[in-house]
Image 1 (cartoon, one colour):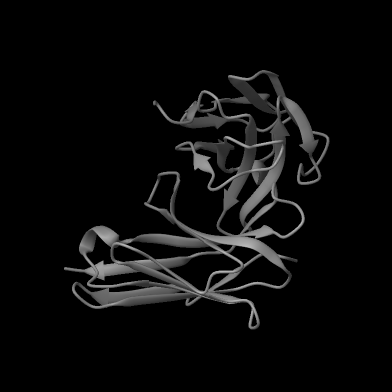
Image 2: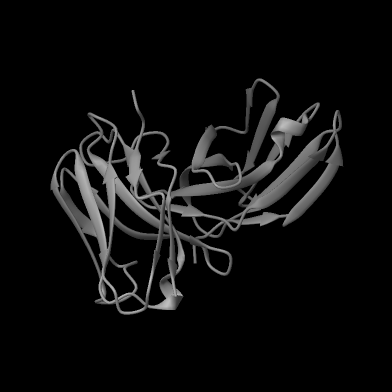
Length: 112
Length: 117
């Protein structure tokens, strides 16, 4: 399937450290998006990177995209306890902009 | 804006009962999506609408599931009869869409947690 797969499934770090999550997918995409989900809440969009972009920044977030390897990474720098959440990548098909495929997520725990 | 509004937030019902989940998308958004989230299967797209018309319902698990969007500000997902394996969190999401194509990100509601006993 087109569904993205995140790696690792779970990540536990200390406050102040950087957190890196990876996402791999299988077919061509129009764009790739990262979402965050706090426990018991809905998903919230973090950042979008288009297929012709290689890197994008937003505050403490840095996203890279390698279309040749069909992979993306999300880096959260100087993590805070409030960053504790699950993070999902979503790929949007190249020829069907209405299809979002979500991965299984990375559960990040930032210890104070 | 109030965001995507879903109700109920929690529903506990017994097997065989009918369940109706409701969603109000963000005003002006003309694409609406229903997702189901479980630990085992993650986030699954059930159905999406564009301009109130169902475009793709290939993710609807079986005939027990049905979805409607009678107008631009309201959608329902109905399960009849419900089964324990339908227990999950059901999310509604909306997007402005341009010319029938989603633009940018999805805006999610807080979800409806369904437990079928």
